[in-house]
Image (cartoon, rainbow, N blue to C red; front, side, top):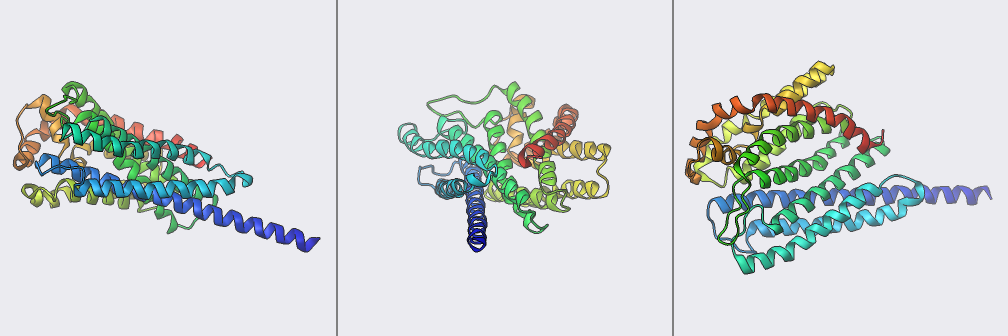
Length: 361
């Protein structure tokens, strides 16, 4: 009887361990797939600006829908893992539910995008297929982040394993940036439709949402990792690498500005060091404000288009982006620095409660 009981417990432990690994692997694939989608999306925007030939089967689109396929596999594996974990009362259902909604939007956006291109040709950033895709990306990435974070919490992972949170958070940051960009950049006017956001509203959205998102993303990963030193710098550096690779390098007129853009890593490292040395409320407020204040630099070069609509109103060709960006920088900082600092602090404050809900603490 005792041997039978021990065998049953051992099999349950084995089932639980394997199911959690399957769930984790599913979450990793979901986040990785969304990362590919966001990279392809940013590349696609650059191709639009450079007026490169646009078809449904373009390389950026191929990358995006490859990412969708990987995410779909990830969601299926997540479901398999969750189904076997129900009896152990681990709360993995929330990330699965969010992923299911997100993957539904993602898979629906593909056929919709094909039909849209077939009938209307070139589409804008805020077209219905693109916005459906972006919302689906965001939900899938959030589900992946919660799934990975909860696995690491339940399994008392080591410091090295916690760097897996970078893969969890970077797609959330990038896809949320895509939502903000869709609602603020004037890239949605085509021959058939005018979806460009109203310039004043776009100005306000960019000035408030970008600083909030930068601060929230970086301070959230700091809390999810239980204050892991260096993780903010790595996450920020990866964001800069992806953004520069898809938004700057493809435009040969801006290639020489890579060194300038890489300087954005300095505030991320400062924030990391500051919180390592002192996590008082004043230090956290300083870090939040610092991260929020650099949004115009972090989102170089495209953020320039939003502020140009109100402050200059120039027609900007791809070869002139750099010059107009720096022509605007002083004026933009005068208008936005205080709101950006405030929103950065709010992002830091929200990360406290959000991390507790994600980790169920």
